Image (cartoon, rainbow, N blue to C red; front, side, top):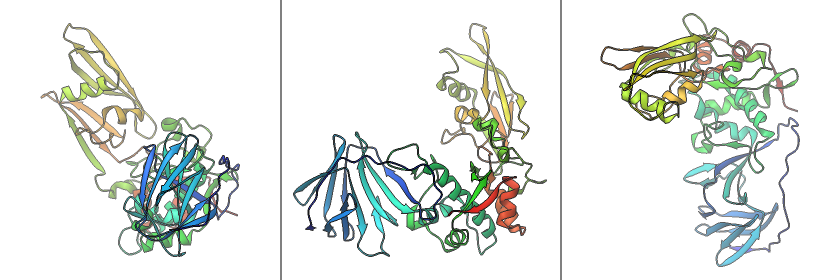
Length: 394
């Protein structure tokens, strides 16, 4: 390790008000769970502080980061440094940086938020998208999915711009389903890279501003109104649309599905959600009271009777139904609210449904079917986001 010197001054990271830019750097949070973090250098890297290279670190060196008040403490090769953040940059422009067994493009940044050490991948917008598209979309064989991949690349780019204004001080997006799944360089695929490159700098806009973009796996035959799911009232392009007849997304694996629950399991889900008091209950009936225009369940009413003969009704509303009921095996939330419910003679509760996801915006398998049928990416986007325009970042 070669040390060139290090100095520290008080640092507060600020973010500009949104200005579209094709050279936008994206900061992806890779981890933030502990007040200390150890990192073993796998390939020689440059160590930066406040954008200044102050060390060349060889393979095998151990870097120990820990929270030090509002700053970050770094111990390496018996030396201790304190700074507001530190960055690791590959020595060669075409090299990757590794973290937790994955390779990433760009820099690896370590910063303290006051209680945790955050590891952040700072990467260009386009390189970030190359690690998102194949993580979020099936790429298919050959180029039959290509127009759908291009449409999705534009959606993912727009979503990233939407998040750039930031809810956090030190990063823009999570690397998982809290935002978009990001797998870094290891999952990049040529056709997905080409979809990103061919749509470089293109985003979806409405009224001259980046559109609010959402997407899901399969809508089940009709996309959902954003007002019904997220309470968004100022985006007419997010009103639901019929997705063909038969549905474009009926090609999705598991498009039709069924979940079977013993009554005790179903009742426990209601109790876990805080919708039932302690006690023993039996379900008298479960029925859909109303639906949204898309066909999704708006109000689900579960009528129960307790051991003492007291009757009660639990009403579940909209997309929240998915997180309350969950799948029968409790591995995840219910696939969608496009379902019917019935109570069988053996007291099992049976839910049969279609599609997968909240239903708002781009239907990914619907887009894939349209691509297979010869639709262009612009036609796909106009179908799922009517009234929007594709524009280039400046």
